Structures are given as structure tokens and as C-alpha cells.
Image (cartoon, rainbow, N blue to C red; front, side, top):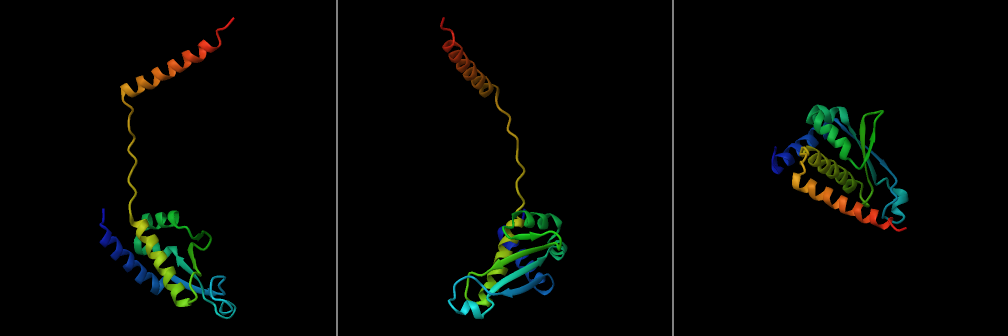
Length: 147
């Protein structure tokens, strides 16, 4: 498994490659902070990530985990991931925030989840559970034996 620094370098490398090919930005009027400036400036950033290019850069397994863990909208018809940011009054800051979010999602997707190991219940634990069940059953049977 890769260490944290290597994952970080791989994620930033993927972001650099994506910036040239796979990212498209659209801007819209934001509903966030900014007063009347909101009505004049298009500070909301809509970043679309082309998942086919992501798959070519980082591989299909990581790409599938990225789609699974992303809190953003995944548009299946166009095979794109949509990341929206409107937290800042500045278009530039919102754009950087979108890129940062994508990088964080890539880092999380690069972590390979551990396989679940089934644990077997010991004989003693089984016997203890069955004994408790039979005691409880006996108590309930005793409640109904009044004539």
C-alpha cells in the first residue's frame, strides 16, 4: 500500500494532468455571501471532471472509488463528476476550492479499503448465548403455567 506522501504526490500529479485536459469550468451567479456584488459577478464555480480522462490517468479501480465516495453529483449520461463551490466572494478562490475538493476526493479514493475478515464465534460464546436463550425461554414458559 502506498504511503500518505506518495498518494499526495500522485493526486497532485493527476490534478496537474487533469487541469490541462479533463477539467471544464463554468461560472454562474452565486447565492452565497457578497451583498449586491452577488447580482453583478459570476462567482459560483461549476467544475466538471471528465471521468474517462480520470480513468486513463489514475486507473479504473480508483476511478470507481472516486465516483462512489464523491458527495458531489455524478452525471452518468455524460460520464462527468460535477463539483460546485460558492463559499467565497471571489471566483478565483472558489475555483481553487473546487480543485482542492477534487484533490481531497482523489486522496480518499486512492486508499484501498481493507477486506472484511469474518470472525468465527467460539464454541463457548455459542453455548453461553444458547444457554441464555433457554433460560429466558424457561422464564417465559413459567409465566403461562397458572391454572
